[in-house]
Image (tube, rainbow, N blue to C red; front, side, top):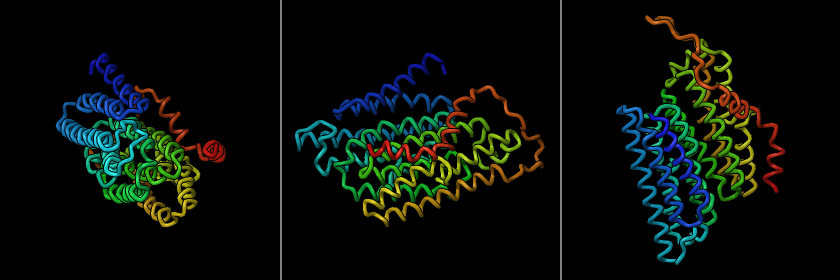
Length: 349
């Protein structure tokens, strides 16, 4: 793609998200979401591959549907209650419709079906943008409207997303689909705690972005798209393969890695709020996710690639890309757990 065109598209992508962040009026927030969607569509379709075009079409249709639902809900609220402000969303019909529209935008269960299919059709860099940056604007809106939404609905969507995210990734062999189901499960944890402790949701979102970025960039460096090709990673770069396994375990939420911190604090907060059953169910569904992360770790570090192929397996990496961002976010994805007391002190302020 032409560098000038790419610069304009990435600038528009940033502009749309910042516009939604800064807006207090529903029309301005909707406009930001639309700019965001229209900017990423050419980036998704730049490969000119049938799978990429199919993924782009599915993404456009789902995002357009969600944007139309948001516009309908805000118009309904303005008609019935006379308010266009995001914080003044008060009618039950409008709040429920907005919640479902934002769930569709983010890929939360039960409206998650588009996310694995879309992510599977994209290259890893575009998939990284879709899994991280594109979640920010809808989450900003969701945090603002969360106090007016029925808490039972939020807990139900959160638990269903953690269950679907763990269950759906069990029998996958494509790494992009596994990361899509991982995204659904992590978003479920964030929604689960959204109404009780929004600061924990932001902490969880920040760590999710760090860990997912590390996972995507590691796969891009190794040029791995399936579990079978992941098995060649140890031959190419043993250090990167070992760190990638630790990043995957961090995504699964194992101590003493960074991914344990948000899960620990969320379970603690749910118990404080008198929801021990929800906390237990969330912890049980985390085991499902942990299983497929362990599958990837096994393929990455404990299997030797078969030498029965006619072509020799590539054994050296071509280090043409910048590895500094990967190094920094991998360190963050692995070593932030000791900062938990400082984080909890900041959240208590």
